[in-house]
Image 1 (tube, helix red, strand yellow):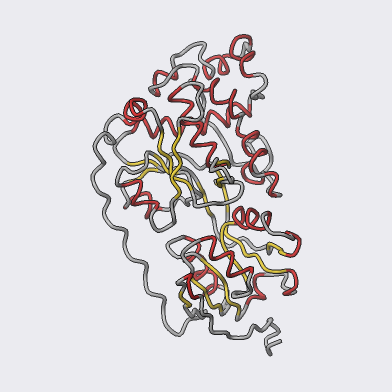
Image 2 (spheres, one colour):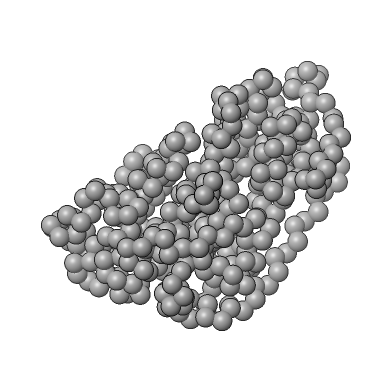
Length: 367
């Protein structure tokens, strides 16, 4: 232990070979300031067919092209047969169902890295992006992209091996910490270390899978990312109880899908798909009872939501029964959460409905 009472970590030189990772020294307060992040490149003009009527472009193509992560348990991950599942994957499928009717398979999933995700959407390679991406001011204003909604409220945390004996992030003074570049996670780590006068040594590794491998192999003392991502990584380990997620949450990470500027109707559709999932849960509409509710529920707002009046679907450019189709196949927001994220040990927390103490998820009126 150091004279200050903080846990001491040995300083190690790490060579990550084929991972091509670099080691950056960071001290808080730092002897030298971290170089500022490069300004985002100006967004290119929307690709042909992507500027004015994306819904019709997608409908005519017959497939929604959706960017997801390269693999994050609970959010977007392929199985051995290449079939994708997860919370973000269900959002892609929900938009496809809204456009195409009852076919959830009209989606082509494209795995994207943090470094390539925005360019892929800007260039028109993707129709939308749904891959644990944080809504920030600079991303919202300088990339030519829109965040239609916050589908998941998250925050950055730390995971360590139980054998390390660490119970608080403040005990990581002198530790090496695996982190992905090109993410809000990297900047948050720097800001937190300086604010808390903690000396850390970031081990910057591009691929999420390689970050995890380096942490498991002991090349770094801790791994940092969104708390939901930590839960996903821990759930896939041979002995999950060998790893603990420390209690500190060091940032706000509102996550949600992205679309390009230039087609407000498509942005509206993605936004109201999220609100539709929330409203369905609030009104007690589930995959099991949505068809009955569509014909028999006498609540006026439910009738409008489920296509019995108001032509709300037509306002979005889709069939008036779009939400019936989405909920019948995927369930409401709570069902989507329970299927994908509850098995990781994640609680609803701020992602509970506004009718629950502490819940932030809220749908505007369907009228």
